[in-house]
Image (cartoon, rainbow over all chains, first blue to last red; front, side, top):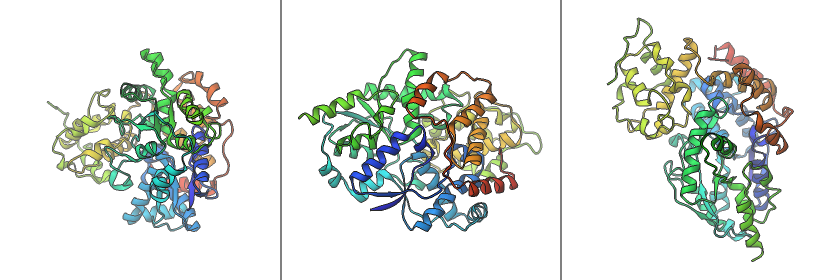
Length: 292
Length: 188
């Protein structure tokens, strides 16, 4: 299993923990990940709110490099994954966009590189059976609210990732690690995404609802796969406390961090020290598991 | 009940929105599923279904002042759930572009300023550079102190880098921005 791995900009800042844990899990499961040389920003929400050609050309500059590598593109950031899938779709289906994008990047690109989310690689290429048998420290009794957010599942026709209203991919992985994926209704509600700095009020309101629902559904932690969801749900807990007095203290971890723990990788290597709300309750379960 | 001001000649938004978004506004049956699923509808003065109806009734530029334009989180729940397959989020994108090009007034939080600051760092460095982006945005809004209490912890945890990442193919990115500007890309 060999892929071109596009880390995305947040892998170098707010989501170093996602990046570290992705690479650690990949290595443990025998997945080879090669970073395309000179990868650049996908443009994220700012690109897509500004100009259609810009929004497609920024991902395409990377995809054309990956095409040269002759590999499938693997992304773990839900935002980059979404932008790349949408760009690919528009380039492949609209000749005008393909022409303008090719002109902007200086090379013709046809939208043909296959884009996979790291979760899809885990479920489809590695398989749950192999993952379950590789688990050394099952997270027994850990109640996890799997949170998918928007960018993994929408627009459904373009991303084509799982059931857009009640996805199960993360839940399946949590079960494979030995944890309990709780049923709850806010799996695909929005956290406010890219409005974290420009409309903090909106993000505080939305994350308050999501965290409140996770807490009342009995979750010990929330598992995510998007750096924007992680930052909003983790970092904004202190703002929610300031504004409403509600102090959730729910750790918000990447699914790759949980999987890494299950695979016996150290919490430090998985970037657990980078979380704003410490995941001590999660790490305690691992201790219990290790000590039998 | 929805009442609208009749658009002045040449100001009606319907045709421009349909052209930019590729959406046929006539098929909206006002079931309000978009508003039910919209996470910010509880916070905005106008809801997505109302925007759709106003457009249908030939609203003019005053619609571009609606607070939902810049509170919409682009989550696309509306588009995913529309029984008529309307890309409501695409309509919001089109309205934002028209708000910029027709000079609608600035909204609280100033999302266009944030987008500009974000894209400027991408143009210069090839990858996002949060320190520069946040500084440019904060200088623009004048709200320098928001969130600053979190900075020391984020720096210590390596969640924000002091220096930009320079490993990207900056040449191609610069070319993309140059071409977009030549084609008069809105807002950059």
